[in-house]
Image (cartoon, rainbow, N blue to C red; front, side, top):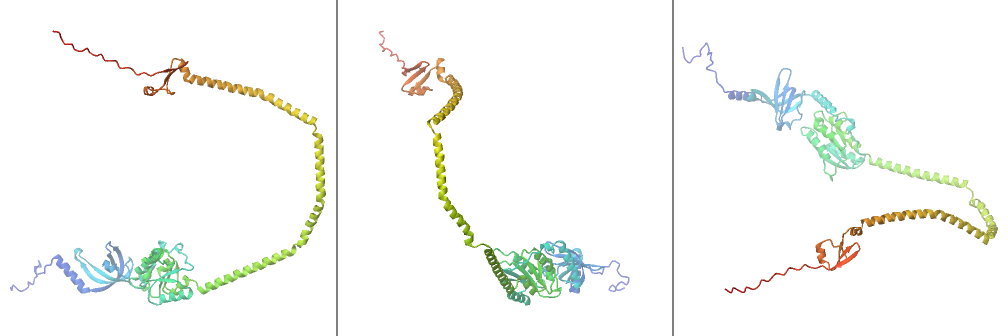
Length: 471
């Protein structure tokens, strides 16, 4: 048998099969997947979605039998036109690869789009119900629009017919100051730019021309073109806006979620400009009309009051008629006044004469005696009371005098004590006695002057001189 020929029975141990390491096999599988499939599109339903802290998104795309693990890295996630949500029917575009550390293959998704308008409408309805449950579309959250805003902020594309229509309509109706915040109105950057514009207008610093009203505007388009205004970030920014906001996205038949969160929805951008300001000529005409009505009312009121005053003046009597009777009474009183004065004077004289007849010496003496008796009676009643009060006060005074004597130092002197006076002041210490020039000692029966003496020092005996010894 030729050693180079194959064994027809085969090698049960597989000694001729190539041998791979785990890493080599994993690398070969990865290269095969990436080379075979390259860039592909896959349609399915989004399953679980996990957003890592790093910004990467991990999710599943599945059908009724199998599941495909998908990954969108942080840099790719920011460029997605639609963010994956569970239950969404999507078409993902990317590259198939393998992850050898776990023996898994997955798809790195670079683009994600909703699979058809029906799926978009289903996702839109689901998002609408979620935001409605949070209260973002509640009527009590909506703010009234200012009647005549000084500054109007417009969030739209700086180029195109929309901004020209708004500015033209504002100029025709009532020119106002307009601040334009340029944004992309479709595509991936639309939602974040519109949300940042709304929040930017609300966060303008003090002193800057802050808008009194915001208009978010865009022309008509398909649901895909308007999808940026259905994003949750835009709806929340509109609901949180402190400045009243008008949504003017699309045509009258187009409806986006920002319309529900805005304070007022306009069917078109031109209609939004009409809602923002009144017609200046109409307002001026109304003011003129009100001024004319006020002038006419004032004139009519003045005429009515003049006519009423004239009618009342006709009903009043003539001035001569009003003064005739008072004049007659004055003349009559003037004629009667001299006689009345004379009569009054005569009556006074007669009364004085009668009083003179009563004021005789005997009458005066009798009146004096009466008053004297009344005085004596009062004195007799007052004397005993005064004497008793004086006696009581004298007894009280005597008691106080006895108390004073008992508490005075004179009584102490009677018991054998004495008081030392030095220079007419009481001496209470030996030092004061030594410094006093005159000293007196007071006893119970008088004072005795004394002369202070200084005790003499005893004389020292002088020893006799030593006479020496005779021996």
